[in-house]
Amino acid sequence: MVFMPSLFLFWVKQQPVELIIFSLFILSVAVQLFYFFFFFIRLISYKPVAAAIVTEGVSVVVAAHNEAKNLARLLPVLLAQDYPDFEIIIANDRSTDETRSVLAQYMTVKVITIKETPEGVNSKKYALTKAIELASKKIILVTDADCLPLSRQWVRRMASNFTDGKELVLGYCPYEERKGFLNSLIRYETFYTAVQYLSFALAGRPYMGVGRNMAYKRELFEKNNGFKSHEGVTGGDDDLFINEVATNQNVAVELNIESQVVSYPKTNYKDWIKQKTRHLAAGKYYKPQNKVLTGILAVSMLFFYGLTIVLLSVNFLSSLIIILFLFRTFVLICSFALISKKLKDNFNTALFPILDFVYAINYLVVGIRALRKNTKWI
Image (cartoon, rainbow, N blue to C red; front, side, top):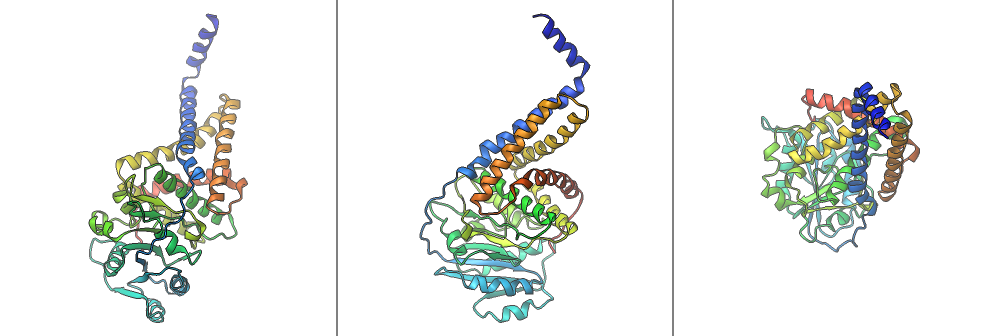
């Protein structure tokens, strides 16, 4: 009986570094599983209540810079929305293409032309602010010019959530499915981000939204002085605004396929990395508790993959490492398969482990770039 503890202590003394690494690996697995079973499971079990009949006016707001082709595709879809009281407002932000000619064809669309952005103010936030100042409705529903609602019920579905004191509605905006691994990776990154912000919101910890598909009360925007506290920061017209005004009581999520908006993905890796760098850079301005919540998840993912490689390379408890690795991967596949089914976002389930690993590598690359670079919207 005395021999076994003595043998264990001898073994520990011989391999202290490996044991520390192994302990960190166990911790990373535990953290990952905690997020899956405490946060992400909420999306799997979420059962939305029947859509309420809401007829409050909605202002659909789009900021557009040189988006003539996309606006020509988007505006007919917006005008065809099945809702009794809505208006469309386009902020034509310093466009030099045919945007003005496209907008001139739609007399019922409100247009505000931005010729110059004030010094020290982010151009997109300024354009959105001027458009919202022109809004006459109580609900602001925002999207981007390179997006398309998937149904004529988009406005109705998003507006139906403004009940019981809700002031913000977070929707889902997948990227269009195309051929190629890059497209799968972009769609996975967008899906994984949505899993986080939607499940955190359901857990009473809302921290961000995506400006391609979200809505808020105009009164809330005005009471918060719009984007004033971060008007000079590149990006954040969506996530920083939500991070500032969201509470555990005033946020609703909308998952129905009829409420979704599809967006067109980047077609080359360089452009996508630039886009992701801009998005991630805004995270530096999140509330401390939100940075901790999202940061722990990100670090645990990087540790999970990195320490798996290290431990297997030194052949330290390899069988146990493989078992834990496969178990966490199995939980990921099952969870994400169920969530993608709920969101009606078709994924090849077999690709999830590969996409998750490549996503982790790219997250590290983008994170380093975000800390070093000053990015711009346009």
